[in-house]
Length: 319
Ligand code: TXA
Ligand code: MG
Image (tube, rainbow, N blue to C red; front, side):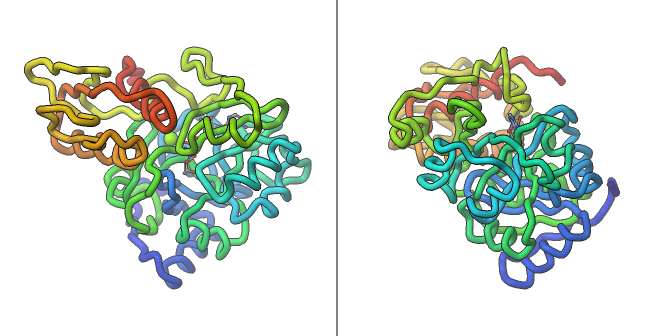
């Protein structure tokens, strides 16, 4: 990887998408919009390109990546679908759900994507620009969130540039991400298990399956290797479930609270709060906030994923 390459911002039109697809085919790194967060994309079949993702993010190499494809039919070329996986894909793709499925022999996917596991994480994103890029490229794109490892995920092209400019070839600017939280990850190699709460509420998945999901999201005993406890971290210290902030703390509010410097959703809407969470943390970082207090957030629907990300933001730092 070239540490000092010039990172270009591409427009989300036909020319920009063609250029992005050409760069991917060339083994270069291109950040692109999805409805959840911006992904840092590389050709999932190209070992060197995938290695470039780990290098650009400074990501531990044991942490496997999600492949992005344009449809469930394309996904079937790379992995085996259980009946439950088929139902979930039918109900929620394109959308904010990733399935971890048994990898096909001869899939052609780089071992650096799966970190040598015999499963692969796959998703069909629901963003017109992301999907147009996947179609134009015509092959699976490995993409973690487009942020330096351990930092806040990007929900705008400017966030990507702030973290990765000079380390990647391009970012396609598709505006702000609508969902704003990473996808919900369901392990589907056997009985479905929740591996990461995310942008699709767990309740919706349970309603589709007709039974409650088993959980593998205990942050201290991660099965999904990317679930490092300290993650999504702003530079300031974060304190959660705060109803009365201390002197010197900046309040990140939720609902009808007084004295909030920023409010994730003054009306207490969890969808709005999810969409604004990472942008708010980026903004507090830019403003140099040293101590951040966060209002309580209800722990249902998208609140579960918001609280998961906030707990990681508040966790003791590994760095
Ligand atoms: O919304 C999203 O999911 C975004 C956008 C760009 O699609 N991507 C994203 O990727 O959040 P990333 O790399 O930050 O998170 C991928 C997660 C990690 O926690 C990783 O450990 C887990 O997926 N994962 C990937 N492959 C896996 C596998 N075979 N088994 C278990 N977990 C896996
Ligand atoms: Mg990430």
